[in-house]
Image (cartoon, rainbow, N blue to C red; front, side):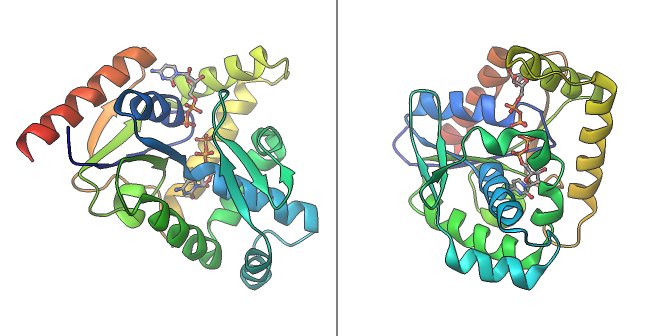
Length: 226
Ligand code: CDP
Ligand code: CDP
């Protein structure tokens, strides 16, 4: 494959986007960009500064003053807000439960979309999020929309938390995920919606490896047929 493609992977929480996007990027020798981590980092910074999470102007001002950056590592992508490493903190429930409010603000979406488009400009990238195929990279050559039942997605998060020693209730997790889906899908700006030209992959009963194989097949077909 000579052409460096832009590959967009969107879908709801815990559909497996980052897990499979990372693996697909690795197989292709592409860069992986987790746009959810950017929204989480902005949420972390706003909470730390005591900014109201739906204050569009205050968030815009904050964004002009902070720098969100990424560094690759063997464990995956590390995330920084200025000098502070926030890689682990942005995965905490406090961030997960507030990020959709911050991500619905126009100033935040505009700033992060611009940054994501700059990162992807030369192709050779797998980017995952909610609006990559619709808004950030509308011309991406490959667009995947990953889905799975809410029950299965809650179970996946439950297992992840358990492995990290974090105690969570499965039903609560299911409710939180459903609520985040609702907020992400109904917001006015760039809601979570499948792009018309995206291919839907239901991962409910598939393993990570099966999903990766399916996506690689779609990419190879695209690269062959243009
Ligand atoms: O990993 P998980 O699916 O839980 O979420 P994430 O990808 O880390 O994204 C966290 C939140 O950021 C989402 O629930 C959305 O509110 C927001 N987000 C967004 O609005 N647009 C994106 N392109 C990526 C994330
Ligand atoms: O990025 P997103 O929130 O969509 O999902 P993730 O952070 O990649 O988390 C998905 C979790 O489900 C990970 O623990 C995966 O190992 C697991 N999983 C999956 O991603 N895909 C499957 N087909 C089965 C399990």
